[in-house]
Image (tube, rainbow, N blue to C red):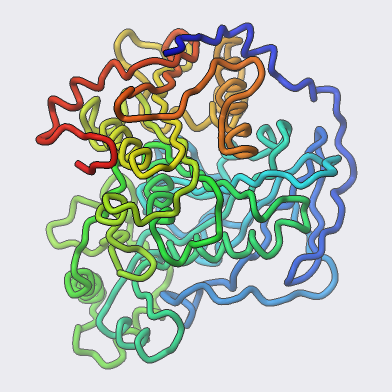
Length: 485
């Protein structure tokens, strides 16, 4: 077993010297399948923001699969984020939104090196937020720094809360008689598929390689990546995956009838009876604020009578992923997977132990897996023994530490961000995070149980998981290669 560590000074030496670049008036005009878009160029990075990948899901399109975006004449300016999806913002969110939320929100963003000539690896970001909060606009999620290392980065919005995950008996009947793929309830997941289909059709026009797409997500975004890894409807849409604090890959299989009752509960709160023949029409006529109804991360699980359900197993897009992973019925692509050291549930909880369990399952079925734990804490926030909290790894993987922490960012913080983002880009390029100047990151195997720890002292250390025995002791059945807990 190799035990190598990365010093902050070595990590800092990897920083790309781009500070002398100057902004140019505009990025090239790109022709995509719905028209032409013009973005902007800054510090050697071209970007296009606010590109529609589907029609606005408003009015009669509320609670329907994403419809095709309408073509536009001339050149569409794409220099600013479009609205994040409708929600009640969570005041203490780790990545505050940069826009005012709106129901008209199905837009995406692209970053790339302005002077790139070859096909670029593509990283597609899926945000977290418990499926009730989040968006693509937070500055921490900017793809510019990853683009400086030779990647093309795409971020997009998907519907959340009751806009993204909602069922009702009348909606089920409508879906069954309206043609299409017959998927009901998981509209946020449908948006994710639509965004990936847009990438497949259009990313080559920007210089990206549609055959080399890496999907990456954290928390709800990580759970989404797990869903996409097993979904029959995502086949051929990505070649690699990064799961950050996405749990153990299991999805609760709740009957549709129970999910529908939750929608009926919500309608009843708004004075719409379950047997009203126009219930769906009346629900679609409600203002967006009424549908949001105060829902956010602080309260979405606190009501006596539930009025929101989140994602569920629909059997077509979102299948029983627990069974699928256990049986090896997933897209066997390279996967980078891990959690933070003080993640939700602690050492033996859903995030930390779950990531380790899923890493073993994936590796046991022959998928190349690179497992990690993020134990590093931004120096200004260090507290003895506290560990790295949920979502604190994001600015380090994005190399947006300076954006997140501003003047408080230390050389050690910046060095860790440069190292982690370099691993990310290397993985997107080749399905292997290793590269020159970095400690060797070995493939995960359950028998060896070796992970990369981004340690509290600012080093990257490969070695046997120090928590493995504790996690196994807390599990009713210790995991073995290819087994699910």
